[in-house]
Image (cartoon, rainbow, N blue to C red; front, side):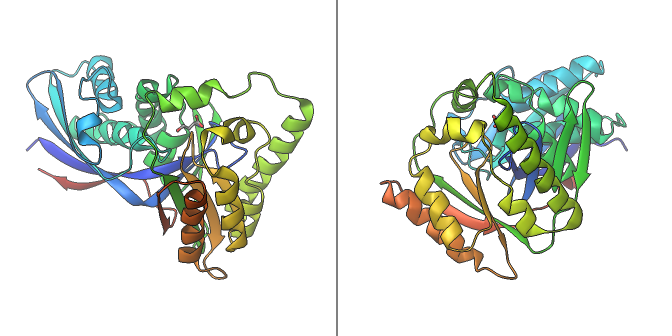
Length: 315
Ligand code: HSE
């Protein structure tokens, strides 16, 4: 019997990890979105429930899920349509890869439903098309992490090449974001402040730090990862967009985190900690307090790196 319906679980992701702008991505164990795909005779229909459902784009050409679905139906000449039901648990517009999760889930789910036989690299290429809806560019760091799980390095965009490494078992990621109204086109705005040209000393700094972050994943050394999550280019240019940025950073480090970075385009901030040495609930609480000192309520929690998209139900 051919499949008619699949439900895919897709993880939140954090991108950049300091020096790896558009290159590093990390999948988180939670939160996850659930995306149910049902084959229908024609067209793409999107229904969103859960967090910020009312504010979510459901026109296929404006939503990451719809863009990916339309693209795949066309590219593979599929004589069908798809209904996409997104149950959103990943806080949207905070820098935790909510659009990447839907895009990755659609690419992965349609691949199964229609027996396309695509590999991860192809799925990432297709899912990255969905990022244009929110970011204005096909950056692949979040979608690659959502598909592969754990740590990814986008080694090259043309051609698309990805390196995927497991995370150290004692690594935790504390996440905090302020409750500020999501600005329209938040990611596009955060990308518009990224410098177009950089100095050679900034290049030297970022290449060194990025190499050590990657070495930390390769050798399973959480302190090495955290201590090199330092960016001399993008993060300094974006910090002003995040109220309490400096205080959150300082509080997390004081509570024992080994490194802090803006999560993707923000405003979420992540702190990496070694759970053998540090109480990560305290790090998360300290980050929340940091936003509080700037006058903002915040959500904060600790999680671990996790796996990529998976099928949770099919019929
Ligand atoms: N690398 C991207 C950025 C991630 O920082 O703009 C956006 O989610």
